[in-house]
Image 1: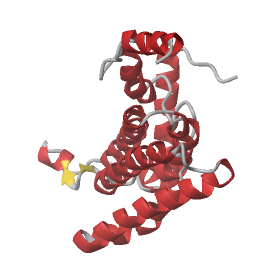
Image 2: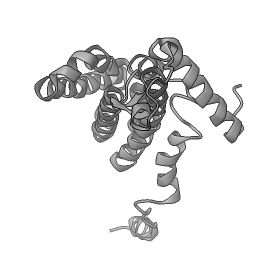
Image 3: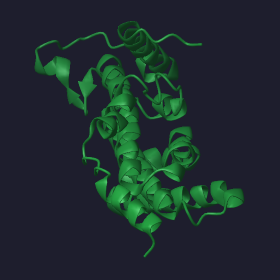
Length: 224
């Protein structure tokens, strides 16, 4: 073995191993929750935030589905990144996402058919969700599997908490309930004046706009 090879081996051996939850890796999860949120900052995935947030239950199922798809698609693409030809990478990414979305759809159909009828079309649209495809192209194609999993979790949870917050206020103010439990009746308010605006798409726009306003006021983010 040459002296040069020995020196390279010694340098490699001295390189410190990054902690499983180092500061950089923690930011992969924490940044999408607030400072780099995929919906409120990157303005991605807006369609499902408006369409499925009338009630909490379908919104929760949609959130779980997106987290599952984005985490496992990130993992699979990261593992395959060195063998995917550059010219067909988008096709491969779409094939992976479509496979995972089909799996989610079939599980819903088998175990919760009523929910499948509510979410069927919207689950299918996860294939074209800009958040999922964006993370595959921007992160998973250039990073290791573990980091890609953390990135997927961060983006998925960042998406999930926003649409769950929108759904909470839409269901509460539009139907007087949360997860179909009548909140106001339970506390003795029998004739709470629910707002029909909240069960329409414009109600989602209003709630989402308020969340974006509060978040950007708090973080000081300015659109350029």
